Length: 292
Image 1 (cartoon, rainbow, N blue to C red):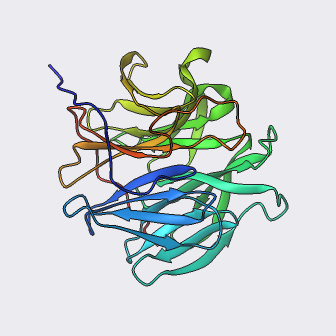
Image 2: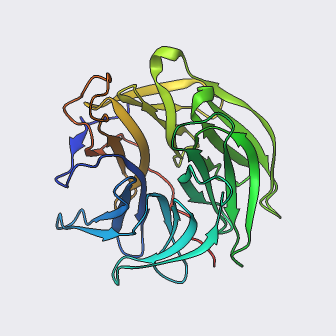
């Protein structure tokens, strides 16, 4: 039997739009972003310490770099950040012809390529895309005609790619060529009912199951590799944005959330904007580092 403890709010500042949780095993720290604030947060679960790095523009996601520091997805494109030194450098621009866009969720593939997508600030349909930053810093647009490029991850064998374009209310599946990292053959993996909320960030655990955060759904859902719903993790926050396994044993599911915009009609939850730590009885997989 899987033993699941109630979610616990971590004692760190609440975010306006918390996103992109990422556990770095080299530093044993959890990183996540507050997108509109342009901040990367980091948290040490051993001593409870917390620090912030100001990036200077909206920041959606990050991953560790093999050379040290982080690769990040920001409003203008891809960059490198050293949280200890507080430095940031833009290394690859995207959507220069679409000034109303910013980058959103991202993650590295098994070979150290960083994938991250965009969205229009006004959510214009079809205005977004998914991009890839290669180790040589070449930038490639890999999927076009998206609206809110969001959660993504790969199967353990690297042959499948899971991806969310939120307004479709689906998690889609692509085939991945392990030799080149190219993706193809897009098809639905899971279609979420309208009352579940919008699919947002996701992660794949060590058993090959997919955990997806539900914006407007107050929950994270776990789906088996065959697409069957396995369980629902409820949270005291309406806008659940993303999730990632962390801790030295990768046995804690960290979940980020957002707070409704002022004047919004969205019901407010007591945990809106909080970071949650959840003991869900399964473990995650080590994050892939950027190879550049």
